[in-house]
Length: 337
Image (cartoon, rainbow, N blue to C red; front, side, top):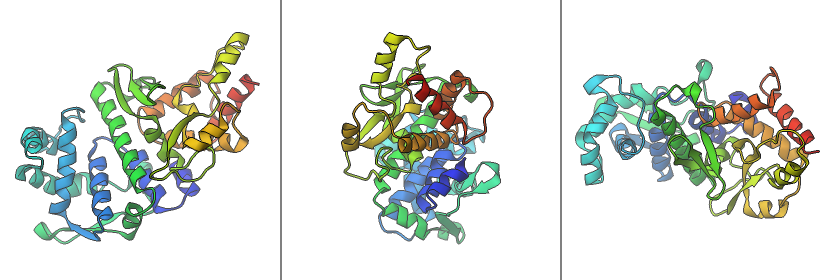
């Protein structure tokens, strides 16, 4: 389904979202690298020494180590996470990474994350590359491609950063549980007062609902299908209005679909959400919801598993990707008449 996601918006922006939202996540290095790349490209750089890129990369990882456990270190005392844990206190106290931490990042980044950043499942790559490594030793340089610079200067640049941060937090929350990923099917709930995804087991907020979902709908309002950009006021919409649950609970028309779950929630312009109010969704909105949910199913852990639980409860039987969400949404629509 990642290929279909790109076909909907065949641009560097969609390729970036594939890498960040849908790539494999055995560690969180990709997110630290992505944040550093956006920062440097957004500052107008066409290239940057690997040593210089290693500083914001290392700082970002050190900052998160205390609150969010990572996948276990595997390389003993030379493993980057081992060094980061040992250097975190001094790094945070100084407000910049220690020389030892920067050196560990510089040595490990090419093989540990930079060779893999563009990879997707199945041995494929995203359609656009965002950097190239050139040179050797201390002169090794990261060339920032026009595709990356275009992203970093676009109207959605700020949104891409918040999407990255939300995805980072979701992946870290999976590591923090310390249990098999396949057991995480229904551990996320929604705090509708604050519009936050909440880890029910740890009783901690994970990420904003809008920030976690908007990248999967290409940064667009689900109602008007126009981009949501910096400065726009955002609201989370119940695509099937929540009032249906109250109305049909009285009628007891069989088990009620839970409309407070992520499958039915979508970032929108606040003005579009206010105008929609409690009306039923249009055919176009439902089609966009199905595509968005199918895109989420192409991402690893937690959010994907939450949506899979909704599909399993619907007992739709075996259906190919692309058919399951239209069938599920059709079933919900029929339930509410």
